[in-house]
Image (cartoon, rainbow, N blue to C red; front, side, top):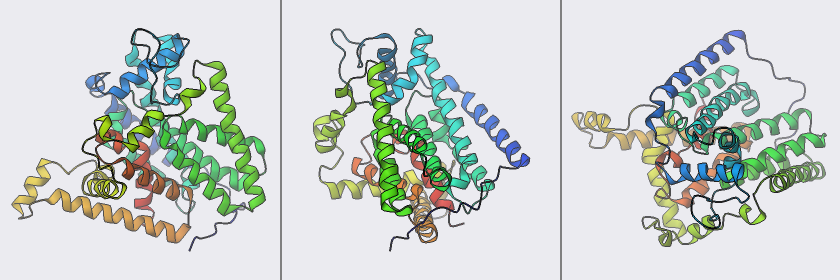
Length: 385
């Protein structure tokens, strides 16, 4: 049974974190900076096709009259990448055209901002938890090897996480205090739209917000708020089209759609073409390996494998991965039974479903288990504690 949420309690204003909590969080940020700066140049720009494409697309927005891959002769080539992240990078391309490595700073800044949103916005993400829980989740996020590695790359995951978290937090904040103010809904729609145009998987955020609003408010008020949200999203898109080289055809990721339907023709021969086998394959791959990587910053490698063999267990990493995956699942169901269909639950469920449709071999591990994925996983795993 879907639990009707009702309007959030207006009688309980969110308190500010204590000085000690702020101090501890400041230390966490310093640690995160140290982890990122150490071997900061270890990742060479252009190692992945994605990062080099983002750089070229940012340069096309800042320096060209057309949006696209301008690194080849003739007209700019169309791209499957949405305009959001290149647009965020375009100031670096404009100010430092000869030093594209500085674009890495966008990922580092977004990561620090994400941790801040997790900490400060925790009462809105889980109203039954204190800021101490926000500190725990932020610490896990900042010390994750995958998160640290993303701070050294020009990849869209950290920035996408920023807009996802901001939208989730603002939805709860506006529903509790400012549900009648159209300006707030317009702003929220703009943020959610930008998330969608950073990564197409931002559709999961829209689904989460729509369901949350419909289950919280009367239908007439819900439709009014959602209407203003869609209006805010359309306004953001129109502003981008008017002020930048981005055109209407650039809004639709046709290449991604083709890849979903026919992965073999795109070189993804390891991906099942049928939906059910693809889903099951991804579920197995994520459960036995990737989920444990999101929760524990250590383990899962050769040392654990050798240690397991000494104990007579041939595949200890697989067993620990399954154990952690089960804990996450239990935390998810516990969260659902306690608080109903709140946004982080809905958003993560739709995101995971889409990722399973992708299949485990579509992108590399660091992209597959990117930061926007395991912030929601962290949240679900610890809700039952």
